[in-house]
Length: 140
Image (cartoon, rainbow, N blue to C red):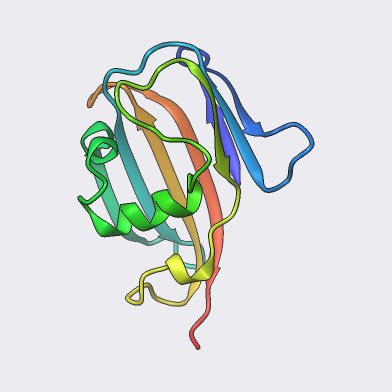
């Protein structure tokens, strides 16, 4: 995993001190709105296999019964550590630094992939946080 962030809303985003399986994010300003662009690319072909732009994060956080795929990832990353609601208040939040294989949807093709997630506070704004995950899907 690779993380990038600007310091306009986030002071720190990385591994929690002394942890390898828990991330810590220190939010320094209220986040009233949030949007997410995410893309999955096949590492071998550099072909995009999934692309969503301007996903309304606050609508999702305030009603996680919306898109089930995002709900499954949310439960894996956040679990019982942190309850996110919009507006997101300043503070320290924790996320898991691993995702179980059962979360991957059955329609996902096998291979090596990159998941790129860009979090923004405005639809046309620049990213505040960027996450890059590399993962592998094997067929059983």
